[in-house]
Length: 85
Image (cartoon, rainbow, N blue to C red; front, side):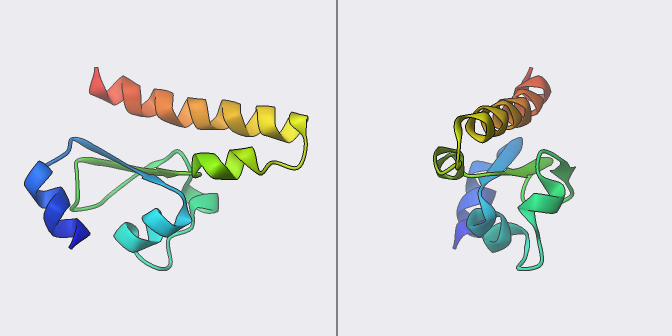
């Protein structure tokens, strides 16, 4: 169902937030930890990226990790913004 909905919208960029979304759309073997912030090939859209779900950042064990994960998340989104310009 998700794929048919995506095909109707025809997005230029698709961002999967978290492992559940990424594995649902990119396959059970897809690992966000290995491909976070990378554009990957997919028939779903010309550009597809997976990154962490924002709630994972909120569960960071300490302030230093929270800050580092927030920065990485922002960098992932900047890559998306750059291809949309």
